Amino acid sequence: MHHFVDCGEQEAAINQAADILRRADRLVVLTGAGVSAESGVPTFRGSNGLWEGHHIEEVATPEAFQRDPKLVWRFYNMRRAALAGIQPNPAHRALVELERRWGPARFTLVTQNIDGLHQAAGSQRVLELHGRLSRVRCTACRYIADRPGESLPELPRCPECDELIRPDVVWFHEMLPQDIWLQAAERTTSCSCFLVVGTSAVVYPAAGLIRMARDVGAALLEFNIERTAASRSVDVGLYGPAGWLLPEVVRHL
Ligand code: OAD
Image (tube, rainbow, N blue to C red; front, side, top):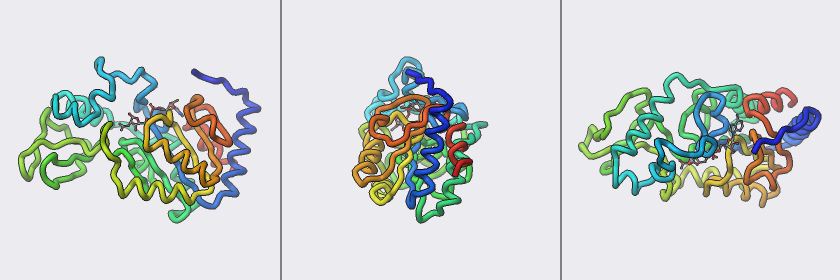
């Protein structure tokens, strides 16, 4: 559902968000697929969440990989190939600017995205909750490697032990990388302002950070093309493309 916000309302929300940010000591930003939408990376739930007739939740699970590793690798090889030629957009760059202004001690970027576009834009420190599409790891030994831009076979093998390798991403039914999750939670429970950018806020535990931020009294700002599961609990909602809204807010700082 799209909400068309009139310009005056949007201008007021931009000013309000900039006011809150200016006064905020510590920032945490949580991003989702929407921040990469304007770079041409499809979101999950927008395009009915299907890939070749499969629900994403059916291909992105350890059970699916056990049952049919070729199918799962086909899905991830397609996603890996789609990364070639994709560039960060102004939303990613506005977040680089926030990191520059606040500094690493007071700014934390947490992402659910696996596309690496925040780093490509220049963000120095990114907590990747769901792993990274360009990275692979062995299902048997400790082999792990970043192999961007490489076209992998249907059933890629470990160069060290010859077992099957898998994308180093978090699948449904799997735990998040604990060290990264703990850092994200720790930064969230000590932040004064929390920005929710381009996420439907329905996938847990990532979406739980929003509640954590609210519980410690942080100001909540949402940037999204439409209202989400988080909208009821935010202090300021900015509805429009993140690639326009985020740079606008930064310009008003
Ligand atoms: P979703 O596809 O669920 O949500 C994307 C959000 O971005 C939606 O709320 C859109 O309204 C919003 N959006 C789209 N275009 C936008 C734009 N130009 N500007 C601002 N907002 C825009 O993606 P996520 O919330 O990231 O997990 O999904 C969370 C997790 O579920 C993903 O990390 C992935 C997925 O299944 C795993 O694979 C474990």
